[in-house]
Image 1 (cartoon, rainbow, N blue to C red):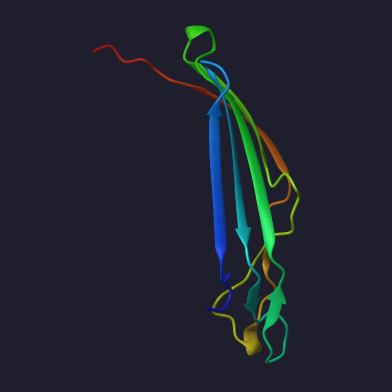
Image 2 (cartoon, rainbow, N blue to C red):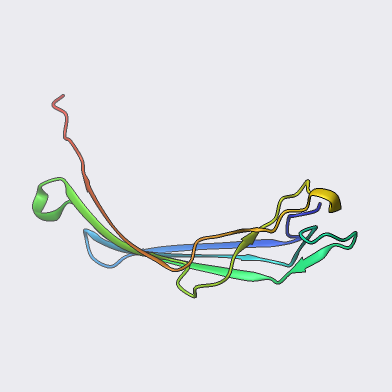
Length: 115
């Protein structure tokens, strides 16, 4: 199908480093994609790509219910493009870019309900 990769592989792994500390990593790989994004009648090719993400989480800090995590998305800063699958040569649009390398911090709080 136009705009979608022929093959996609996903990998996820997580490990508890300590009682409240965990680390996870995931990777997603796509084969080449084909689609129309130039004003011609030939399909254009986008190269295969690999996205690598990682996340470190410290849960329930000091028994308070607070958790803090730091993560990174697209660590390899791969150029990821999304094709419009239903574009035709007359109205072909250039692919939409995916996100670049991104670092983030997540803070959360879990409320304990009384039973």
